[in-house]
Length: 356
Length: 231
Image (cartoon, rainbow over all chains, first blue to last red; front, side, top):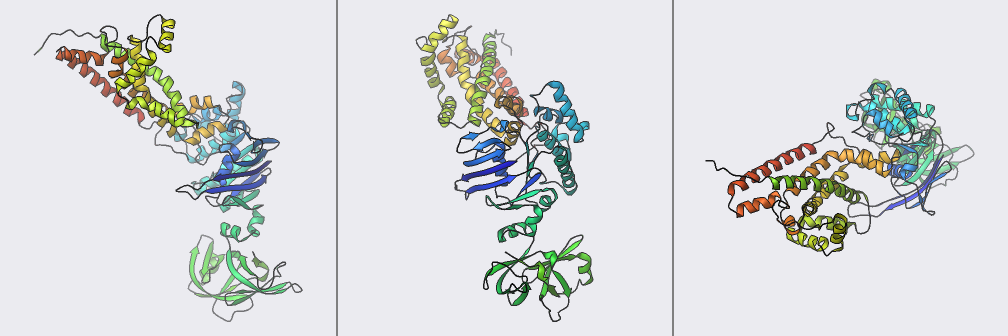
């Protein structure tokens, strides 16, 4: 388990606005994803854990070992931290063969044992055939696997991955995910993975920590974070939702109902405990939970008439963007049937309405 | 037309020997200084940087004067040398080595520092992350990756050692057969009106310098296929 509580300030310079990292989180076994937009301090956090950057204050605890303690002036050198680090661009030593790269990581152990270990890991990562090549003679996938193998061969207590999928095409990305899942099962080493990719978060994350401007804004299982973003900032970061400013016009706990006003349109939602009539809040709803029907007939309850502005078509789904900043995702076939229609009725299912 | 002439080759051999020894010493001292300047943050770093660069801009006679003061027979260093080796340092061929050393080390430090700084930091981070001590990191990662630039710098330092005139004159003198290096020999030949002797030496030195520059240029082109960059 890794416990991190760190603070690091960068004073504003003539060309930079300054930055302050101030966060606290814990990560158990499995893969913990540090998720956030670029500039949110993800990689900086990783570098603090690895010992490349010294935080101003705080404490980093890995299992029962103190890696950093500001008050006690403990700052273990990177060499003594036993954290395997997978660099964004692999950082394989270009003047060494793949085998030498791996041997470099286990040079302290006796020769025979070292040889056995290297061979074993070469087999495991399907690299035995190319072990005599230099990094520039390897394919992207091989380099990727080699950098993970090199980080793991010394039996680290924690694996740190800095945007490992950045710049990879779709097949390589899928391969990487397979490798990482294999690593999670076979090596059992806890990992912290930095990414700004939602799919990656969902595919690999046992837990996710959402960062924004150097702070943790939410943490939990990916499923929970996506279904219930803690606040409008998280929802914006995830970029998955319709976020509509609404006013609460009525609350009825007895019938589990509420009345919301969006522009000149009334919605009926579930009862929201802890809110007051007159509160201005954000209605947060996933585009795939809304449904649409063609035509400009009379809107029924929770239906809203809207003009279609733009459609983004994907192989399986179509994302329909309406006036009033509402997006709806439907299976593409459904949209195909009414391709020419401009006026639609959008239905907001009462139970799926959430406010932030 | 052909004038028979007799050339004394001693100055050329002396110069080559002096340049070789001083380049070896410059590498030992220069790499260490360059590494410190490239990697360490400490008080007085700028002062050290300035001090190392100073010989590049000082007039050779000024540098030679300082060396005479600090290495002369009455200075502690000069006396220590005399006690150790049984003869004075100044006005010996070893003094020519010292002169060449001070003439060429600043150049080597500058180039080597740039070479060390151009090694991608992520390789050094990776090495530390994999448990490599700073010493092993230097020998196994930084130095091999900077190797070609450093060899190029050493070649240039060699060329510069070969060409020193002023500092050598000040502390080693111009003693034919003992401390007269090729640069001094050319000066003497011209003074004495032996134009063709000077010409031969000049041509040899020019050819050597061109060869060294070519080697240095070849060395500084990228060794590992297309340039690999890592963030």
